[in-house]
Image (cartoon, rainbow, N blue to C red; front, side, top):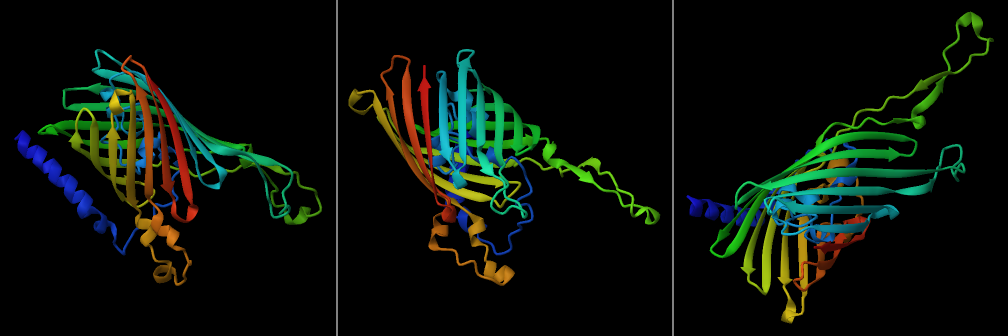
Length: 375
């Protein structure tokens, strides 16, 4: 039975990578959910490793950044660590993420905390009356804090849960919410080659309703017909915003090591992702690692991936009757790559520096850096 299950898992991985992509290339795409969620910075990831793999990381995550990608992977850490990452996003915005995690119970469990922030500050306010700016500025600050608990229930299965508090400040309006992430990781071997599968649900929680001084307005009631010349005092009122749900995301990932020796590792990854605010995507990625080169304590990793973006197949000409004239750069959307340099002499202390490049098509390229320390 075990051998049959492993063979089925391998076959599923191959099929998902080979035939999964064309399955998304359908003409009738339902876009009704696009733009219906708030706090979408929750989808920006954590750590350069996951970014370089195009997000195809849930099945492989076994380090500090598992706090974000798959809480079940946190229990696979063999020692404590801390990580900080920074991400230059579009339109001069920035996303920062930090996490710290500690295994305990003889390695059977782990606990960790993460913090993510996104936004910009001091942007001029433009209005119809003042198209050059009215002299005031506004800022956007979005933040989440999460606490994770993860446990190995056997030598082949782990699960984890994360509780998060989210705040979303948009100028003088703000809102808050809470959410949960659930993750599982099944890991086995095909001969001497590790294979793992994961299923993750992210951002399952309450909706966000914004409030604040920006929604305060003055309302003039309509005067009676016989009192047209009597001045009317404005009455204070407050606009009410619609509740916006969080960007709930479902992930199913597979990872298989074609090579796994004391000196090197070569891993193939595949992942299917379905958010509630966009179309589903499929991703394939590779990671190659050289460990402890010439017994120097140094190691390197090279990574690359591609995420198929169904949105790029929408034809404005056929749907709306016009052509956007998008350039060929759109076809680069989803390409990612990167690497890491690590140092660990085996004294219980190690450091690593990771970099990722990710192409967002017509929005340009983005760069992700992260640094980690382990003890």
